[in-house]
Length: 197
Image (tube, rainbow, N blue to C red):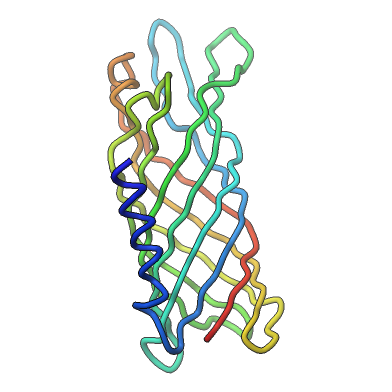
Protein backbone atom coordinates (compact mmCIF):
# COMPACT_ATOMS: atom_id res chain seq x y z
CA UNK A 1 0.00 0.00 0.00
CA UNK A 2 2.90 2.35 0.80
CA UNK A 3 4.29 1.86 -2.73
CA UNK A 4 0.95 2.82 -4.33
CA UNK A 5 0.68 5.94 -2.14
CA UNK A 6 4.23 7.01 -3.03
CA UNK A 7 3.63 6.43 -6.74
CA UNK A 8 0.40 8.45 -6.73
CA UNK A 9 2.20 11.28 -4.92
CA UNK A 10 4.94 11.28 -7.57
CA UNK A 11 2.31 11.32 -10.33
CA UNK A 12 0.63 14.33 -8.71
CA UNK A 13 3.95 16.20 -8.59
CA UNK A 14 4.87 15.57 -12.24
CA UNK A 15 2.90 18.52 -13.70
CA UNK A 16 4.58 20.96 -11.32
CA UNK A 17 8.05 19.50 -11.86
CA UNK A 18 7.79 19.41 -15.64
CA UNK A 19 6.13 22.71 -16.41
CA UNK A 20 6.89 24.73 -19.55
CA UNK A 21 7.64 22.62 -22.64
CA UNK A 22 6.41 19.43 -21.04
CA UNK A 23 4.69 16.64 -22.94
CA UNK A 24 2.16 14.46 -21.10
CA UNK A 25 0.79 11.15 -22.32
CA UNK A 26 -1.76 8.49 -21.50
CA UNK A 27 -1.29 5.12 -23.16
CA UNK A 28 -3.12 1.81 -23.38
CA UNK A 29 -1.33 -1.29 -24.62
CA UNK A 30 -1.51 -5.08 -24.76
CA UNK A 31 1.56 -6.63 -23.13
CA UNK A 32 2.55 -10.27 -23.67
CA UNK A 33 5.63 -12.10 -22.53
CA UNK A 34 7.66 -15.24 -22.06
CA UNK A 35 7.10 -17.73 -19.24
CA UNK A 36 7.32 -16.48 -15.65
CA UNK A 37 8.59 -19.75 -14.20
CA UNK A 38 9.67 -23.19 -15.38
CA UNK A 39 11.04 -26.14 -13.40
CA UNK A 40 10.75 -29.85 -12.85
CA UNK A 41 8.92 -30.83 -9.67
CA UNK A 42 8.11 -34.52 -10.18
CA UNK A 43 7.29 -33.41 -13.75
CA UNK A 44 7.82 -30.32 -15.91
CA UNK A 45 5.71 -27.34 -14.84
CA UNK A 46 5.52 -24.03 -16.72
CA UNK A 47 3.80 -20.85 -15.54
CA UNK A 48 3.19 -18.41 -18.39
CA UNK A 49 1.48 -15.04 -18.67
CA UNK A 50 -1.52 -14.16 -20.80
CA UNK A 51 -1.63 -10.91 -22.76
CA UNK A 52 -2.22 -8.16 -20.18
CA UNK A 53 -3.82 -4.73 -20.67
CA UNK A 54 -1.40 -2.06 -19.43
CA UNK A 55 -2.13 1.62 -18.72
CA UNK A 56 0.64 4.23 -18.74
CA UNK A 57 0.93 7.84 -17.58
CA UNK A 58 4.00 9.73 -18.75
CA UNK A 59 5.64 13.15 -18.74
CA UNK A 60 8.78 14.31 -20.55
CA UNK A 61 10.88 17.44 -20.95
CA UNK A 62 13.33 18.47 -23.71
CA UNK A 63 17.00 17.95 -22.80
CA UNK A 64 18.34 19.02 -26.22
CA UNK A 65 17.02 20.21 -29.58
CA UNK A 66 16.09 16.61 -30.50
CA UNK A 67 15.97 14.48 -27.34
CA UNK A 68 13.56 14.37 -24.43
CA UNK A 69 13.86 12.76 -20.99
CA UNK A 70 10.87 11.64 -19.01
CA UNK A 71 9.12 9.40 -16.52
CA UNK A 72 6.43 6.77 -17.02
CA UNK A 73 4.19 5.12 -14.45
CA UNK A 74 2.39 1.95 -15.58
CA UNK A 75 -0.30 -0.35 -14.22
CA UNK A 76 -0.72 -3.82 -15.72
CA UNK A 77 -3.56 -6.28 -15.07
CA UNK A 78 -2.75 -9.86 -16.06
CA UNK A 79 -3.43 -13.54 -15.56
CA UNK A 80 -1.23 -16.63 -15.56
CA UNK A 81 -1.59 -20.06 -17.15
CA UNK A 82 -0.14 -23.29 -15.75
CA UNK A 83 0.96 -26.24 -17.88
CA UNK A 84 2.05 -29.58 -16.45
CA UNK A 85 3.28 -32.46 -18.59
CA UNK A 86 0.39 -34.74 -19.47
CA UNK A 87 -2.28 -32.17 -18.62
CA UNK A 88 -4.01 -29.34 -20.47
CA UNK A 89 -3.26 -25.71 -19.66
CA UNK A 90 -5.32 -24.27 -16.81
CA UNK A 91 -5.85 -20.67 -15.71
CA UNK A 92 -3.65 -19.63 -12.80
CA UNK A 93 -3.43 -16.61 -10.55
CA UNK A 94 -4.31 -13.07 -11.55
CA UNK A 95 -1.78 -10.32 -10.90
CA UNK A 96 -1.23 -6.58 -11.06
CA UNK A 97 2.05 -4.84 -11.82
CA UNK A 98 3.09 -1.33 -10.90
CA UNK A 99 6.07 0.09 -12.79
CA UNK A 100 8.12 3.26 -12.68
CA UNK A 101 10.50 3.99 -15.59
CA UNK A 102 12.88 6.82 -16.45
CA UNK A 103 13.84 7.08 -20.12
CA UNK A 104 15.15 9.10 -23.03
CA UNK A 105 13.60 9.38 -26.49
CA UNK A 106 14.78 10.92 -29.73
CA UNK A 107 14.18 10.96 -33.51
CA UNK A 108 14.85 7.98 -35.76
CA UNK A 109 13.12 8.70 -39.08
CA UNK A 110 10.39 11.25 -39.86
CA UNK A 111 7.59 10.56 -37.33
CA UNK A 112 9.36 7.57 -35.76
CA UNK A 113 11.15 8.04 -32.43
CA UNK A 114 13.21 5.66 -30.31
CA UNK A 115 12.96 5.28 -26.54
CA UNK A 116 15.12 3.47 -24.02
CA UNK A 117 14.84 3.41 -20.25
CA UNK A 118 15.32 1.63 -16.95
CA UNK A 119 13.11 1.40 -13.92
CA UNK A 120 11.52 -0.65 -11.20
CA UNK A 121 8.50 -2.96 -11.24
CA UNK A 122 6.50 -4.52 -8.44
CA UNK A 123 4.10 -7.46 -8.70
CA UNK A 124 1.39 -6.47 -6.23
CA UNK A 125 0.24 -8.79 -3.43
CA UNK A 126 -2.86 -10.91 -4.07
CA UNK A 127 -5.09 -12.96 -1.76
CA UNK A 128 -3.65 -16.33 -2.78
CA UNK A 129 -1.29 -18.17 -5.10
CA UNK A 130 2.18 -17.23 -6.26
CA UNK A 131 1.54 -13.49 -5.72
CA UNK A 132 0.23 -13.88 -2.15
CA UNK A 133 3.08 -11.73 -0.78
CA UNK A 134 3.60 -9.86 -4.03
CA UNK A 135 7.08 -10.03 -5.43
CA UNK A 136 10.43 -8.36 -4.96
CA UNK A 137 11.12 -4.95 -6.46
CA UNK A 138 12.50 -5.82 -9.91
CA UNK A 139 14.88 -3.88 -12.12
CA UNK A 140 13.53 -3.50 -15.66
CA UNK A 141 15.28 -2.46 -18.87
CA UNK A 142 13.22 -1.27 -21.82
CA UNK A 143 13.48 -0.34 -25.49
CA UNK A 144 10.78 1.04 -27.71
CA UNK A 145 9.58 3.14 -30.60
CA UNK A 146 6.77 5.67 -30.99
CA UNK A 147 5.21 6.48 -34.36
CA UNK A 148 3.27 9.75 -34.33
CA UNK A 149 0.12 9.16 -36.34
CA UNK A 150 -1.50 12.52 -35.64
CA UNK A 151 0.04 15.86 -34.59
CA UNK A 152 -2.67 18.50 -34.32
CA UNK A 153 -1.42 21.51 -32.41
CA UNK A 154 -0.91 20.57 -28.78
CA UNK A 155 -2.60 17.18 -29.14
CA UNK A 156 -1.19 14.06 -30.76
CA UNK A 157 -1.73 10.33 -31.17
CA UNK A 158 1.13 7.83 -31.26
CA UNK A 159 1.41 4.10 -31.87
CA UNK A 160 3.80 2.46 -29.41
CA UNK A 161 5.97 -0.64 -29.41
CA UNK A 162 7.72 -1.56 -26.14
CA UNK A 163 10.17 -4.31 -25.20
CA UNK A 164 11.01 -4.96 -21.56
CA UNK A 165 13.39 -7.30 -19.72
CA UNK A 166 13.25 -8.41 -16.08
CA UNK A 167 14.31 -11.28 -13.77
CA UNK A 168 11.28 -12.83 -12.07
CA UNK A 169 10.63 -14.91 -8.97
CA UNK A 170 8.45 -14.80 -5.84
CA UNK A 171 8.78 -16.26 -2.33
CA UNK A 172 5.83 -18.58 -3.02
CA UNK A 173 7.50 -20.00 -6.13
CA UNK A 174 10.72 -20.69 -4.24
CA UNK A 175 8.75 -22.33 -1.40
CA UNK A 176 6.96 -24.54 -3.96
CA UNK A 177 10.31 -25.75 -5.32
CA UNK A 178 10.95 -23.43 -8.29
CA UNK A 179 14.65 -22.92 -7.68
CA UNK A 180 15.49 -20.68 -10.62
CA UNK A 181 14.98 -16.97 -11.16
CA UNK A 182 13.49 -16.64 -14.63
CA UNK A 183 14.54 -14.24 -17.39
CA UNK A 184 11.30 -12.66 -18.60
CA UNK A 185 10.94 -10.77 -21.89
CA UNK A 186 7.79 -8.76 -22.51
CA UNK A 187 6.52 -7.05 -25.66
CA UNK A 188 3.70 -4.53 -25.82
CA UNK A 189 1.80 -2.78 -28.59
CA UNK A 190 -0.55 0.12 -28.00
CA UNK A 191 -1.69 3.70 -28.54
CA UNK A 192 -1.01 6.89 -26.58
CA UNK A 193 -2.66 10.29 -26.52
CA UNK A 194 -0.16 13.12 -26.01
CA UNK A 195 -0.55 16.72 -24.89
CA UNK A 196 2.25 19.30 -25.17
CA UNK A 197 2.23 22.60 -23.29
